[in-house]
Length: 393
Image (cartoon, rainbow, N blue to C red; front, top):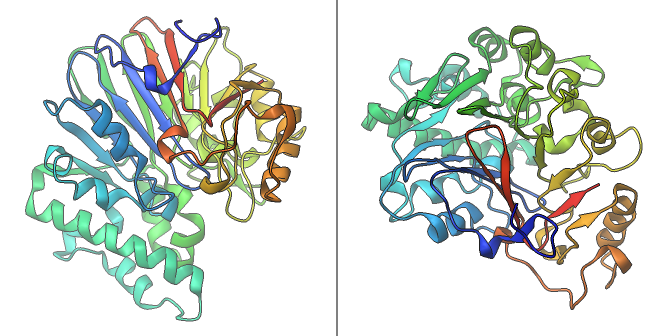
């Protein structure tokens, strides 16, 4: 790997797209997540979700920086309608240059109900109409979701070629050795979710259960992109969660790279995905800082469970707000991070040795990023980080 000071890591500003390689970019700044894939042997892209922590999607800045303008955005995918994933989705779709380049728009089709001749399905429409006006969280979450879902439905109706139903079995091929597959959700779990009572609250609080999980192959390289899918909730197994996926798709741990599900929460980590397999794998996760903070770094929490199987976890930023982000050292011990997070949450001016030298400056969301380049032989050949990203060891 090329990098700074022999560490194998270079600044994101040094990234040059080598189209012989597959480049995975994961961006998350405390609230919001986007995943971008620069496809090899083409000028194409896959864009997953639309983080917009300060109103401006970092995916747009990264695409404007690295997109040549010649290739298509082969897929713009919404994994699930939660605000940290949909907030910048329409800004990508409405972008003067990027929007027309979007070839397919994907999501779980039950949210749209296009088969009924309307933008939203009858169950979803009824759920939106039944929102308690005094439930501020539901109004905020579902109001924004409704705008995004209606727009996706309109695009599907106007341009059927853009419709991509994200359910297990859906797949795309980009040449002979580059394939994308949907692992979940399965149709039966989608049907169950949409026919059970109290749909509005389930969309607000449990839409993660239908989060789209992708399997991307490039020759011998395999990336598992875990969305926000959980394993369990309140110590009860989620029917559509990782236990089910691992039962119908054994060997998920035999991957090259993993976008860790749900901000590396303990409830999302499943042995069938993370168990050691003899190969070194690249794991990257994003943070969450609303109410509960994720990931957590104490013994027995998510990162320590990951460290039982891999010595490094790439973290795009610490779980604090975008205005509190400061430049970080490239490698930080897990034991140092929980105190650092608590200090940053208290808005103190310095964090001691956990912070890179120099003045604390506000970093743009596009600096809350890891980019990893993979060859087709199952190897990560280069890593690039934004200035607030770190490797947890």
